[in-house]
Length: 251
Image (cartoon, rainbow, N blue to C red; front, side, top):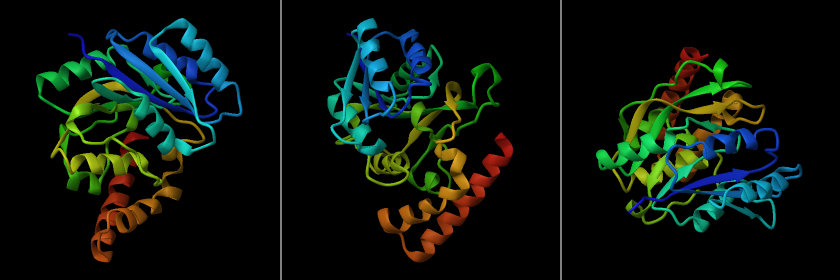
């Protein structure tokens, strides 16, 4: 019996990039997938493009929020619509390697893995001019990603029935908090340390505003995780240090 993968993509004003992303999904060598795209009240032609895509492939399913709800709620809407055995996240401006789903699913099944992520490269306009690979550790646990989160959203695949609930929270780094929630349930997440994803750098990318937004991490430690003042300060200092090191190494 084939294993179905649900791909979850929130869309907001992505008309410039969504067709490139679509090409990378439609080119996947693993074919048993559904692609759930949820438009968050885009003001450009994104929704029209999405509707056109549904005419090209019946595996593509498009929904639209009634009101602008931001990425966390839009992903959650997609998760509610999903029917797959596995969940894969893909942002609307990123690009997958053609073997991404095949390689990651095989790895997860062979290694009895329920939470998997991969290495990736960054690019601005052309993946052929992308950065060197952003390496990832073979595995991480809850405590290790408090010191440094190396898990990029578009690299993640989850075995759905391994978790009671897969849901993003209304926080600045909604993906990071989800990884923490999942690692409370499963001790480890496992990495495939080669590039299966190309992460597009845009003016709106969180990583492009890293040094403006990194203070939000401290708020997560204090407000969302309930860590003490001292522990929050310690983890925050390590986070900043490790972020700086990664920035220097990869740019």
